[in-house]
Image 1 (spheres, rainbow, N blue to C red):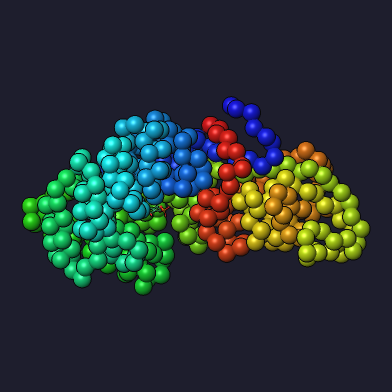
Image 2: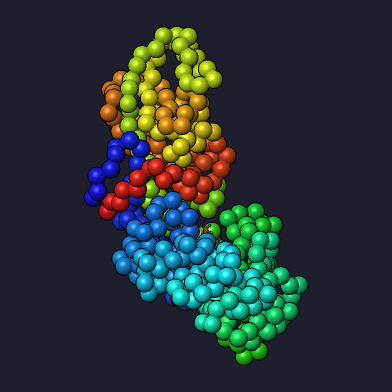
Length: 378
Ligand SMILES: *Cc1c(COP(=O)(O)O)cnc(C)c1O
């Protein structure tokens, strides 16, 4: 392992990633393969090691990313993979899409024409249908109209259509109204696929499952399960349990740089938002918002020190923060503390941190900044 500065770092467990893949495979039918969603640097876990592990150790063949730069990077780590770009690629990059043998998500006939006009090579694509997310894709009132447009698009020269897909807006909810909404989204895309089949067009791929659908409404009709957040062991929605065996892949740690005892009345950190109401032991920790540990955790977050929860006191600074270690007499300079992960019997998850300041685990792990080295362990 390369040496790294023991200041603030993330430990990424490839063994746990493998276990999560096994769990996801056990949820899926035989007709469904995993499409590993590795956008945003594999949700902050580091795409190189994550993709290599998935491709080489777990035999994952399908990957999804958000853009061409990510796709080209993944191509370097997984030379034989099928890589789907979920987001927008400017048409002038059509040649790169073809050259790297990438599959582009196509959102309209106009876009397909623009892509194919810009390169002599065929463009592989999956056509995206907007069935209710309201973000990107073909929008139609009926599956038959949608199928008719797809059939017309398939006549576009050099456009190689390998599948259709859609994205669910509320598959991570157990509210009956939301379940009915997702049912309608799913029916629209499967009916579209079936209408195409009736017209003699049988596409290799039809996919609509994200992590939440993979967990809570797994369907053999989806040829791929586009698993993102559950690969990394986090919850699509904090209020719903995830299947047993899935566990977080990333832990984030830092170090105590100094411990001091302060008297009643002492102020801690910028803005003097915290004043000691008694004599206290305060530890300074080598992490701050520039590491992606949000300033919104000021006065609210907790950090594990020798397996005990210690509250953040005062504001989180750019590179440092202070915690109350009055109840942890053994805490001293040089000790490793856990911001995200397990320490003794206790655990702080990215999902928990997210709920403390009103976001989702996705944003917490994606937000761990480049300054924090990722260390890969088995
Ligand atoms: C990000 C994304 C996914 C993965 O979502 P998770 O909730 O992380 O599983 C799947 N499909 C599309 C289109 C996405 O943008």
